[in-house]
Structures are given as C-alpha cells and as structure tokens.
Image (tube, rainbow over all chains, first blue to last red; front, side, top):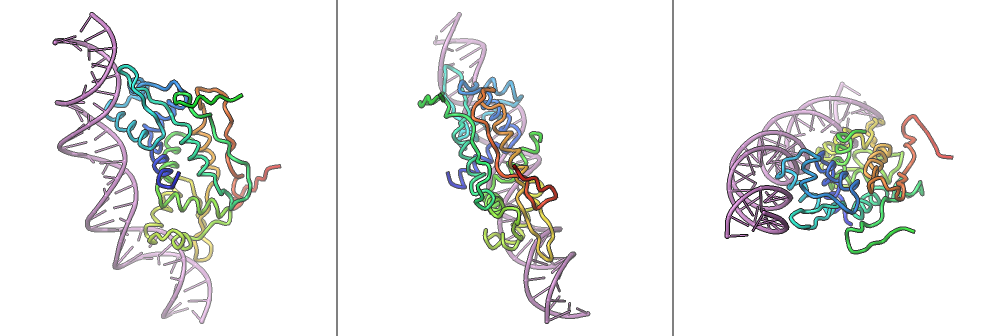
Length: 117
Length: 117
DNA sequence: TCCATATTTCAACATTAGTTGAAATATGGA
DNA sequence: TCCATATTTCAACTAATGTTGAAATATGGA
C-alpha cells in the first residue's frame, strides 16, 4: 500500500458520516448491512449515503455485493489493518516500542474463511 | 475523544503532504524537527507547509514549541493511539479478536515522562 | 542597531468535496 | 406484465480545502 492509497483510505473515514457507516459495518461483522439499513441508522439521505458508500468502496475500506434487491456492504478489515500498520511503522525512530497487533481476521464474507484456533 | 475529534485527526493525516510530515515526526521521535527541516525534507513551499502544520496542530496530532528562532514540531503519539483505539473498538460485533496494542509511550518532550516497566 | 534567517500571515485564486431533490435503474413479487 | 421497494445517478449548487507569491513578524548575532 503506497501513500496515495493510505491517504485515500484515511480520507474515506475522515468524515462524520463515513466514519459512522464504517463503524456500523465493523460492528456488524462479516454479515454486513444493506444500504437501506445504513440509511435508517445514520439518517442520511439515500443519495448522500450512496455517494459516501462509493467513496468507501473506492478507498477499498468496504466491499459491496448484490443480494436480491439489497446491496450488502461489509467492512474490509484488511485495508484498515494495513493502514494501522503503516501509521505505526518506523515509529519512534525505529525504537522497538510496543508492537501494534491489528484487529480481526480477514472477513469471511469473501472467499478465504480463515478462522483462528 | 468524540467522533468530531476523531474525524479531525484522521483528516489531518489524510493528505499526502501532512501524512509525510507526520511520519517524519513520528520517526524523529521526541526530539522532533524544525519547520525548515520539514520544508527541506518534503519540498513544500514554506507557506504551504505552515498551513499544513497548523492543521496538524489544530487536530492535536502534533505539538509545536519555539526554540530559539526555530519552531520545533513533534508528533503527538497519544492522539494517534486514541484514534487507533477508536477504529478497532467494538470490532467484529464485540467478538474479542486480537486486541490492539497501540504504539509508543507518551512523548517525553512534554511534561509527563511516563515510561513503561 | 541592522541584517540575515526562520516562520507565519494574507489575499487571490483554483480545486475538490458534500448536499439536495428529482429522475433513472434494478429487482422481486402479485 | 405491472407495481412497489431498494439503490444509484445526475445536475446544480454551496462550502470547504489547498496553492501561490508577496509581505509581515520574530529571533539571534555581527
């Protein structure tokens, strides 16, 4: 992940509405949530939500999949973890401080169903 | 830290120039770097750098202190760590996945020289 | 004091991001 | 097929962000 992708990912969640959406998806886990539910939970106008979801998808922070007439969105933990890793890399002039262990295995909504233990 | 502060912090580093500056400061550690050195390392015009530094300070991601005729900037690890914590809080629907241990003790450039162990 | 260096401020402008409401598209069910 | 629901697209507009160069301010040293 280069700096361009990192800033895009950060920019994606550097907005009240998108941060709210992203957190809802993080908390929803691999099952995700349909756009309508997100609209209901955030109170965003459908067109505005759609705009923000596109941003999140473009930044690779979120995945979408059609399911019947719903579109289900899921958080992409991998990208978030890569961002966290980048932010703490080379921290403190290379001094080995407490290492960052990023959160959550790759989502099971995708192909790889990697489960711990 | 509320969502407004989080988005401000994220927005502060969601920009190529500011991310570069922030990383340089993270790597520089508690000693920090003067504005001029940052201008040299990033190639930013002085007025542009000044603008971005103000953003970083405003977002509480960076501290500044006058030192002779230089202004020394330092990264504020505490804020970064709070942001990392927020992003992974309540992850996976509350499932206790690998916990995030954020990076670096509070900087010693400030008053509190809290060292672990 | 006067000068050189370090940094910030300002105004003008250019670019990008976000919001709104209406219309378009897609899907499943009667 | 026709209708209702779910979501996205579009165009117009508003607001926020970022860039530039010149001028202003502050500091230390000769």
